[in-house]
Amino acid sequence: MPQIDSWLDVTFWREVLRHTVAWAIHALPAMLLVLLLALVMLKALHFLCRRVELSLMRRGRTGDVRTVREIEKRSETLLGVFRTTGKVVIWIMVAMLALVQLGVDIAPLIAVAGIAGLAVGFGAQELVRDVISGFFLLLENHIRVGDVVIVNGTGGLVEHVGLRTVTLRDESGVVHVFQNGKINALANATKEWSAMVFDVGVATHEDIDLAMRVMREAARELHEDRRYKASILEPLEILGVESFDDRAVVVRARIKTQPAEQWQIGREYRRRLKKAFDAHGIEMPLPHRTSHWAHDSAPSRAGARAANGASDGSSGARFGETGAHA
View 1 (cartoon, one colour):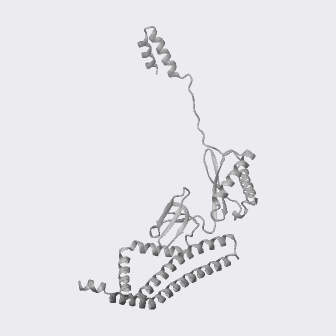
View 2 (cartoon, helix red, strand yellow):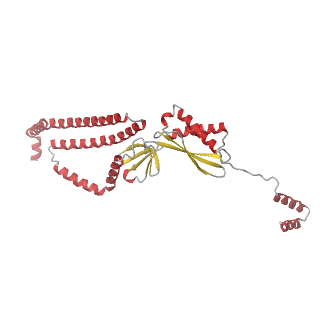
View 3 (cartoon, helix red, strand yellow):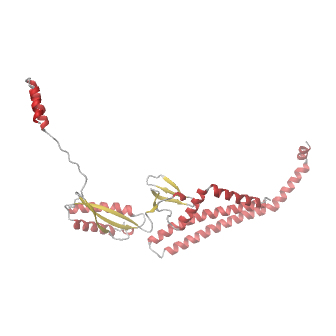
């Protein structure tokens, strides 16, 4: 009861108000200063990232289109991770300074955070492994945003590369997320340059040298087309006869293209090659099936004779003769 009476006393609330005003006078400017410092650091981070990006782009303009694309992919990936990490560090510092202004002793908090970090390090070894693997994945520039890759047997377009996970989206729009520490196999189809390999089947009775000339001519026309010229890095390279069987001779060829352009170039080249083969009368063998129809087989004639014998009462003898003769 005495405590409740003290709360109802005007003097008690006057003291509370006085201490609150005193704290606001001394601590509020410091809190505003901390927030202002946070905004300045975020602006500085953004400015630094922008300067690095412009510097990389300016350096890439002296190279070819392939170099510019490679620099764009790497800068987007690395700067994205750098921005995220920088923002987390800045807000942690702001939280620490705010607690100090509120009169909270952060030394025990730092000690607890160190112990908690150690415990997390032992308990979340998989998370630590993912972060370390992601760091070296970015440092060694194996994968970038915008690449077409195959991770652990799953292919797709890279949409996100972080310290912990890699995100892909396949042709069906399905998103696949992989932990960096569990990436066992990584194949990049768009690193620096790409290529489309063709296995062209030609009928065995056709002139193989003529077929190769037609293949080169179709590739030359495709390379001269202004819609596809920028996507092709080198002319068609015919590697030679890859294999042959009783129906076809398989010729292997390759076109080197800009990264991620090999599929478009491959589709257009196949269309033009089919029309060129048709124009020169070169046959491309296709799977076929032959069906045989039997109109008057021997078993049918035997069955007819058996039926006739049954009508005149001598079925047993005729069936016996037929079986002995067979």
